[in-house]
Image (tube, rainbow, N blue to C red; front, side, top):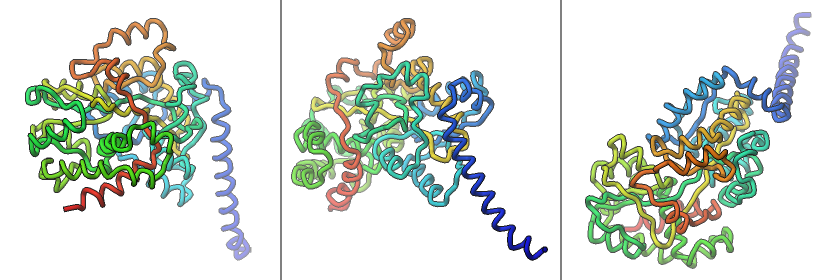
Length: 412
């Protein structure tokens, strides 16, 4: 009898595990069928862990000092922000997917572009979720292409738009009276002020965006890339001017281009210490909080080039194995509320553009929005709108990373 029990025990354990897994999957599928009030009830007094890029103090303060207390008070949710680069987050999820780990440690990820494309193709995300989020349905322009597509990849409800940002250069007006207006003028300025300019390595999101602006210029505008789609051969035939430009300025960069900042955080530090006189980045208003806390000089201002500035919508998603999907959905819905979006728009913390359609806001919130002063370092909305450029196929991000190494970094 004992021998029979010993033989049957592994089978019982296996069947039990399969049953548990099936129940878990069924439970998750049912979550998307629940009424919103029921989802809110399930989220109460739970813990939500959000993994996100942590390289901006203003963003971190917004999440820790404003979002976390509000979630605790309104829903009893304990919010924890885990700083981690997005590609590392995806690698973690890929490993968990391969190991069939049904219960992970990540509830929400901040994601877009190439990372979203990879996550979607590898079935790393839970959803579709957006049709269940009341604030998405009420305040987002669901017909906008920026909502329906992320770097050319159909969103299909797997991520919710969190904010909109636009690329700007930041400079110290006490040292630079008139910033460059074109890439040609930027090149001349770099040569006249050796060592005072550089850009992050293109493995960094900001460094890659700097190169994408040059790519647009080299091929004759973003429209050609949008029309062509992802076509490495077309780009290869058109971009010799871009590599020539980058190699021409290389000897005049910080440390003569022998090394590059590995992140925007490092470039910001160099700017704050006066090593370089310019920095850059997505989010047209990001300098305000850094001026306020004394990191950046009060003379910091921003500019865009006449050729344009890339705008970007970024998103929030829930991993396939989030242990608290109800809490994640409630948290994302809160982050899409007019209250949270208006606070994010203020220069107090973050200052970035809203993902909400201003015309869909209640009248009171529309008036509040009009009265917010974004600060002296922020360009007017008209200037930004007039210079707005779209993102193109996310595969160009990887193409630029790889080819920059051969065409610029390793060239002597």
